[in-house]
Image 1 (tube, one colour):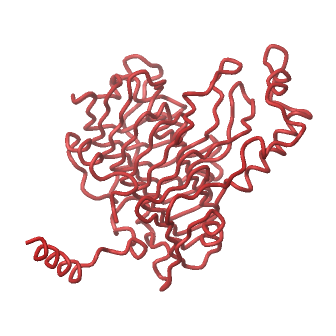
Image 2 (cartoon, one colour):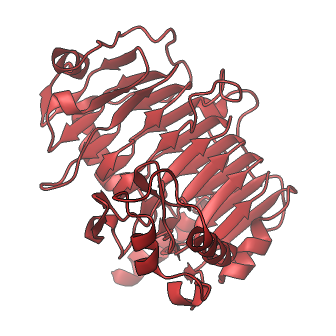
Image 3 (cartoon, helix red, strand yellow):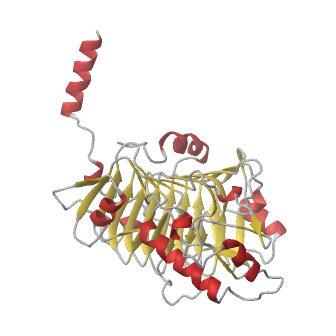
Length: 400
């Protein structure tokens, strides 16, 4: 009987082989990345390459010619530690003593700060992987990157799918503006267009910032963003992914200055699980951002601040999202914007007007007219179906 079943499965597989993820392109209506010509990545290339080391990956995704790159296994930045990257003049304890706000004002400057910068430059050479235009990057089953950060910089037409990226760890945070600032996002989209990020899992790995000490009254952060979209990037779709256990998570628009961002930063976020994110999920400036069918989970004891950051000139259109573990008035935060459209939100299983909840406790009030309505999107599922959908299907390893 087992032999008959196996033969039947083999026959079906032969007739209907599993799709090659490297050849797939974004569906015509799947969010902002489908606009103005769509997103096809490296599907035009007849060849494909499989990489198994950090250096192979860096070489394979460089350049702007069409290319399909598969990641196999667990890749990391190498065997060097933070101590290996540090120049002899850098010492954390001396750094803390020198820039203690009790006697130092303004950003860090001087020999110790120069030593920190030199140490950081050493680390950066190993951490950052820059992806060129016309690239499809796909993880094979179980593929992951640890201690690495992907940067889509000055590129067009890029697809990243089915890949886990953990712990883009900055060994050398800087004290600036009354807070600890860090480098390295798990994934950054900078000055780039037509980007589709799908079925990825982004986390801090085994070194969560929540476990770090406080210096100068602020958490000593070692991670920057999980997925930042900045510097005039445009036409981005982020779908069926998991973002977990992070502080400053999704920053879309890194300046209030409209010079490079006005009319850009058009982004769609749908069918994602956002769990244990303290803030910026997303925080938006300038862009028309469609946020629909996402499940937000706030664990007990989390340092949760807000999810939707309404920044300058932002136009967030939120539909049928769900939240658990928080209260309605905390979901939105005003960062100089004037409006957010929000509908169909469930909070702890109950329908809630979270904009009204925000306006009841915050001043000035935010309006609900953002001046646009999304037209490029797939089915908008009922909010009650969203948690089960994303639990079953979101994240790396859920497609093959």
